[in-house]
Amino acid sequence: MNSMTALVDSYTPGMTLPQGFYTDQTIFETEMQAIFCTQWLFAGHSCDVAQPGQYFTLPIGRESVIVIRDRDGTLRAHFNVCRHRGSKLAWHDRGWVKTLVCPYHGWVYQLDGTLQAARFMEDFTCDEYPLVSAAIREVAGLIFVCLSPQPPDFVMPAAAIAPQLLPHQLEQAKVIVRDRYRVHANWKTILENNRECYHCQVAHPEFMLANYDAGLPGDDRNGNTRFQQTRAAAYQRWQTLGLSPHEVSFPNGSWFRITRLPLRDGFLTESLHGRLTAPPMVDVPDLDVGSLRLVGMPNFWGHANVDYTMTTQVIPISAHETQIDVAFLVRQDAVEGIDYAVDDVAAVWRATSAQDWQICEHNYAGICSSAYRPGRLSASMEASVTEFINWYLRQMTDR
Image (tube, rainbow, N blue to C red):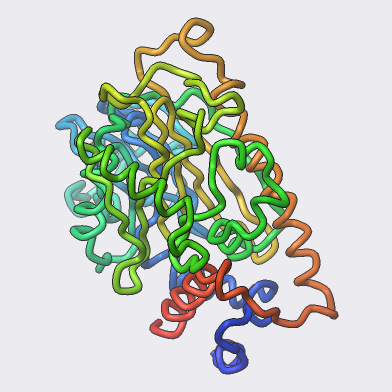
């Protein structure tokens, strides 16, 4: 705590964080407890657990959570810990089961977490040993979990996300491919990189084909620029389509953002050619619906296009390494090879992701140098990075 206090005291607003915040493993362990075990985390997609018995696991530091649909159709989140001697119950990333059976001694749990059978246990009551559960919420096809027994409010995020994301019908979608990356960088450098487009013109030629490098909160370049005029005209058109465009950017210092932004002329989606890469997911007469952007600190961002949705999940491994899972979803009835090609759907974001992870690794290598000093952030281009840092420090100091 003394180290943490000293680091917080050494932070200068408007600058990047002192080196220890990125490199110190003790600080990392504190983050896992103060942030990742207390905040809503993006866990996955409803379509992956649409049927009873379908499950996937979510690693969170020393913790692991099983997200599963029970026999009544209720979504559950159980800590991946047998109540006998603590063994992991689920050893695979995802699957389907009739019951949860511990591979160690064969204790059997119902999908809702109640203990059904425990072999050779005398004077024993199964009702006293259910699985430990975590809070879970499902909104417009996205699943969030919180490990804290007192999770933050989810009413406001759900109210902001649902009206804008529901038209993309993610609950009737399917994941066509998942790309997993191990990035040799601290998780905060990855979030900071995501929170600005200062680097986009330099580093992301494929992304910039379809996108403007504007639209982030705090970007004071906008004024009465062509982008602002384009967005205002798009909002009027989208409202007539019933898409409820509304920017909600980290209200009252909260953890989430959702906004719909226009794409460049000639682009209906984030593709290399501007044409659709899969059948429309949004049922509207005008397919020019832009790109719906979602951010959830500390571990999620996504882009919902008219034909596909991309989600990015950030899982810290250590102070120096981060796992990132990028998923691509299309309509459930779309047929590969006829309606879409995976490489076409994923082209822009595979290129952009690879570029970002390389940027972050080089950024982190420099942060680890003895020559690193906190740098000045651009007030016009990196205000969202400052907002993220302020949010991060609040979580750390509050706990």
